Image 1: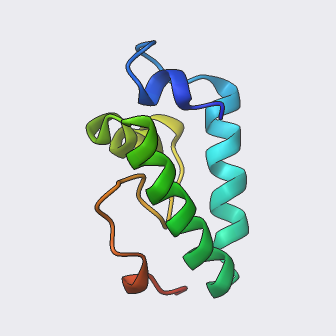
Image 2: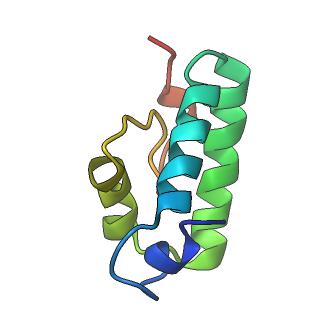
Length: 84
């Protein structure tokens, strides 16, 4: 997971591979509801298992200058997301 060092506080900035991965994931889920929901559930479980710093996770879209439809948050309700 290219964003893992940033999400766990092991480095202070996002890397190019992190931003590229986040952008690719965003593009994938933006057009398919089933992929969006499944991806949300996967991210939610991984965030909880890894002990992700949620505040850092929320910074990724801004730092990478992208729009991410699914927050990286162990408390997110994956049923509330819709493709617009």
